[in-house]
Amino acid sequence: MVNTAGKFGPYNQQGPSRSAAFRGQSGSELVRSRIALQVRLMALPPQERLPDAGVLAEELGMGEITVRRALEGMCQDGLLDRRRGRAGGTFVAQGWETVVPLLHDADEAASLEAFHLLLECGLVAQGAGEVPAGRLAALQALVDEMDLIEDPARLLMLETRFHLDLAEELGGAGIRELAADLLGRLCLVQPAPAPEVVRARNRCHAELLAELGRGALAPAVQAVKAHPHARPS
Image (cartoon, rainbow, N blue to C red; front, side, top):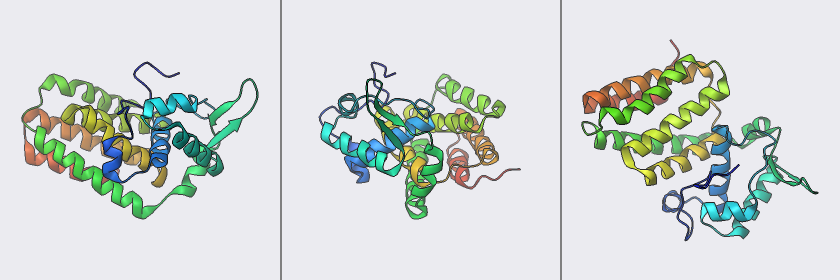
């Protein structure tokens, strides 16, 4: 299930990522957010077995005890299931989607959203006029696919991939990691947007790519700012 690059990576193998430290996120919170992100990305569907704690610890670059405590906490919250026996292990709970709403925190969600908006505005301001058209092609493919998708879960997955890939294209692997920390935590503390809202946001994605392709700084930043407030037509 885990590729050689690590489903939860890349990470600093000497300790928790600097992006996590920058956000003040503890090791346990980082484990929770990265698992939540993988659930959103459909890489860990309900009833999927997680890697062993030692494997997770290596991929996350943190102590195995920290990872075990985080997994135990998620089991207590009902996000994960612990099964014993030959086919045992730690699994994504079948009722993940019913448990997550109990963890929503409007204040934290607003703070994380504001930080993510600031991050993307900065990346766009830095990259406008310097992004070769070819580097936007994969992002445009995600936008085009979102226009055709009916399944709500896949729609959310593609939107999340868009923001992760945008962070990497404009800022590199380290910035993608920071975006992953933010988006993973938002998966837990913020209600998932309705499909019609995601489609409205996708119009902002398309506009952003068009303006980046033209090298138009102000309209590109405006497209990022419009994203959180997008409304169905």
